[in-house]
Length: 320
Image 1: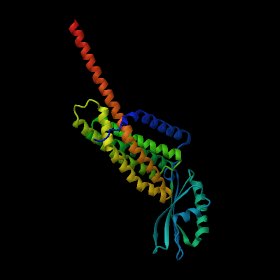
Image 2: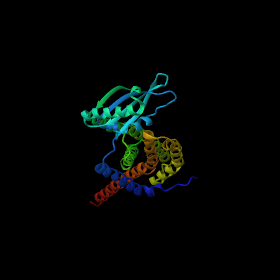
Image 3: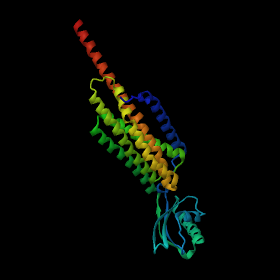
Image 4: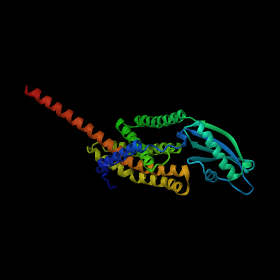
């Protein structure tokens, strides 16, 4: 018989720890703000092509190093033409002043001319992103995450009892806040890649939680005479523990490799993913299950109280 681990003893300490972490993240957002990436800031997008000399390969890092006059700039390679001799890059830099951005473009082109030769650099297109578009993007991001959580909650509500479903959603919200706490404390840039990491973890975390809830539901049906719900909960968590740990560790093999061997936005994605994977495993065991245990205790207390009230009413009626 498999040993039953008493996870329930750590429900309250873990709830307190998670609350303190999330509160620290909220305070950090209030006093330090979020380090938004260029996608969420007003600025300019410049597309340029660079002709490569024979045997030379120009990378995005080479272009970034050439832009010595730009304090905050993002460079992406978006294609190559002419049998690989010509490469196209997208350059983004943040500025709230459209007129000032024209001066910055002149300085940017000047740096590129000095580094690669004026005859080899060609400006393809230029676009300005206003502050209104940046604000809309932030709002759409919030709506996207909330809509994802609501849809998952509806799925969980169809599959499980309402308290099980609500426990699963609390775990997802917990993971989202923990990842945001990591992002704001580490001063990592909040970009569309960060959003992708959060949505990935939401999908991963609900999968881990559903496995535990399925086993709990099976054990409740399997042992209908067992009055100690906490024992069944601990039993279900113990039976699925190895699965939860193995799934998390094997997934982290890939995310840790990305963190070690990549740079830039992919490295940030991997680091956020690592935090989310650990948080997802932790929340499935302690946060979701802790809430379900609390709801069962409240429900059981209510049943005892109603039974006591009926008994008192009956006794009073007999005495009269």
